[in-house]
Image (cartoon, rainbow over all chains, first blue to last red; front, side, top):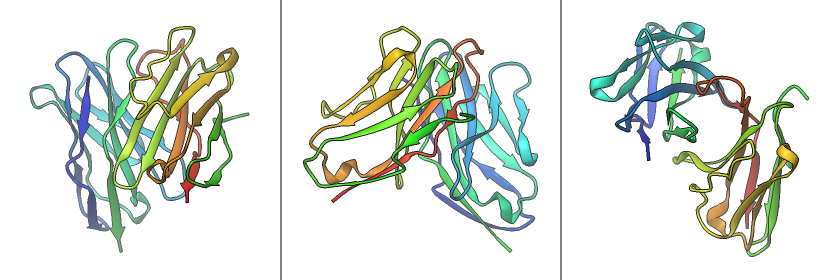
Length: 113
Length: 116
C-alpha cells in the first residue's frame, strides 16, 4: 500500500519569503499526486494535482509542485507567500486504478507580517 | 445541495456509547470516502465506497467502526462503544465516478466528535 510523508510539521515564514514543503511517497507503480489545502475554519480543497505529462504543475494562488519520479517526491513551492496562505497543507497520493487516496499528516504554514 | 453535507457538525458523547455520523454526498457522485482527522495525525483513511463494488474497509481502525452506504447515496459511519481516542473530526468526501481517476475529492465540513 502507498504511504505519504510530509517532512515539516509546522513552518513559519515572513510575508514575501519563498516556500517549499516536502512530500515523499512510497509506491513503486504509477501514481496520481495531489496537494490539498485547508484554510482556518474551512474544508479541504484541491490546490493542484499531477497525473501525467509535464512534471511541473501549476495550481491556484501561485502555487506549483514538481514531480521527481526518481526521488518519489512532489514538493510544493511558492516564490512569495502572503499572510492569506496561512493554512494546513496536505499531500496525497493514490495508485492508478480504483485505489483510495492516502494523505500525509499535513504541514501547518503560518505566515507572519 | 451544492456540496457534501455532514451531520451533526458537532457531537459530544460519553465513553461507551454508540454514535452515528451521516454524510450526504454531492448528487451524482457515486464514490465516497470517510477520513478521520486528528491533531498531528493528518487525514487517516477509513473506508471507501465506489459504485456497486465492495467497499474498501482497510482503514477502519477496529471492529467498533462500520459504515454503510444506502442506495448509492447517503452514508452512515457508526462507532460502537466509543473510546476517548475516537475523538477527532470525521470527514466525508465524494467524487464523480465517471470523471477521470485523478479528479479531486469534494470534502464536507466534518463532524467533530468528542468522547468524554
